[in-house]
Image 1 (cartoon, rainbow, N blue to C red):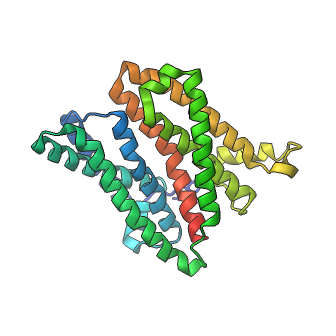
Image 2: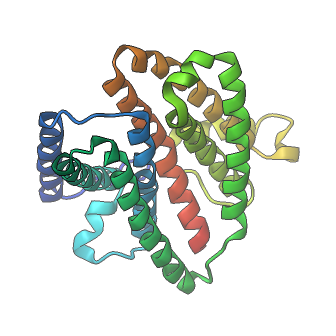
Image 3: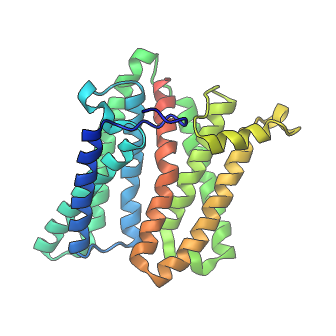
Length: 275
């Protein structure tokens, strides 16, 4: 079944398989009393990018037919989550054997970075049939997003110093994720001429198209602004949650970051490919 937003529900056997695996890994993580720190949230970052990249490969049909349902949206995010949890479990097991719990985020982030490097290498190869790889706009998006994130996070740290002190780099990851999503979407629509599948961003940009500024600066700027405002508001709100319940608060931070970084990385991968 294909949903209006382009989401695809896989066959029942895939849904059941992913559901069972998800329940198993979550139960194991809970039973191990897995610690979630700000460093843990940052370590999840590469895995969020991996999820978006894997879906880009699905879009260009790079996977064998039997594996395709695992990487459709939203199944790809469950697949990636399960892989992350398996690595997280393995890292905790090794850390407990060595009695070094502080190294868990390092292992999770390190494995994720290694997988991401392989994925990016494959990306260049996959881009060749499409006349790629194309670097100009993806590199520009990453550079501008990084600079804007630093400025915004600095201003937020002045406005809500305690909130930023509680979440540290995990909070910056949230802002970066949604900045990347906003700017990559804006560039896709205004510069590269791609369409927007998600209803809410499309509605925001359609409204921007009715404004006098549309002829001068395009329609994507309003979506970027909305993403930044939402990211900052959520960051401040969740930081209070982190103070009350560190584990669930930081998991909420990770989830919020994934909502931006997954789609953003999917955009960037597709831009590099030229698909």
